Length: 89
Image (cartoon, rainbow, N blue to C red; front, side):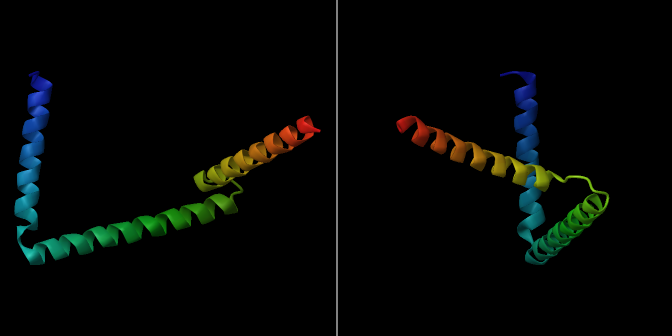
């Protein structure tokens, strides 16, 4: 077994033990869950604000590109379907 693999396994084992101890106490686990929830709500607020600012600056967001990709994919399928129908005539 290589050194890298050994170190990775040891690190995973230590982190698993640390997580066990960290979540062993129910009150501590609840506080950690609350903190994680707060971080997630904060990230959602930042993402929403970023989207608003990007749109105000007239820049495309990642979601805009995803929507465009879906639209293009849908159009390609419709074109292919129409092409097949025309070829059949």
